[in-house]
Length: 187
Image 1 (tube, rainbow, N blue to C red):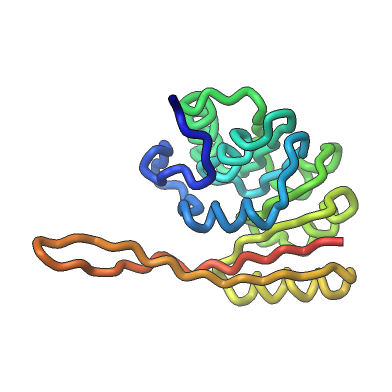
Image 2: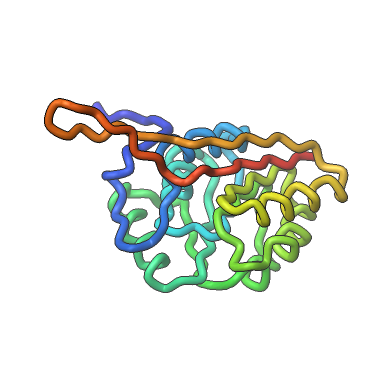
């Protein structure tokens, strides 16, 4: 019997040198999306596709559109789709917002903006009722929150710092990952 869960172990993904949202951050991000089985989720800056994969597993009648600008990352997304045997994920190799103009979706994850945060947000809020953005810099967090305020969106902000235990002989060290700000904007 195979498990269907949220929070796939990081080591199960094919990773390469592409940044990946860590397991605990993915769980919180997915919880903020308020997923329903037939949602169409747009994952901008998909990286390795870890969030797209988790969404694809959870969306029994929906689909995910993973948008990524880096070729190495796009290749990894395809490998992870194959590994997890999913057929409800479409991959777009391109830069947002240009590559998302004619797409249909109702929820959005932004994991990377390539410096185009406000332009992307301007496009996606026309179709999405929920946008969840993961940022690691204060500047992108500020841009996202200020944009959402100007547009009258309800904002939910969580800042998480995950540390994982590393066992060395008979002692345990806590090793921290980057702090991640998870911003949910909703109408």
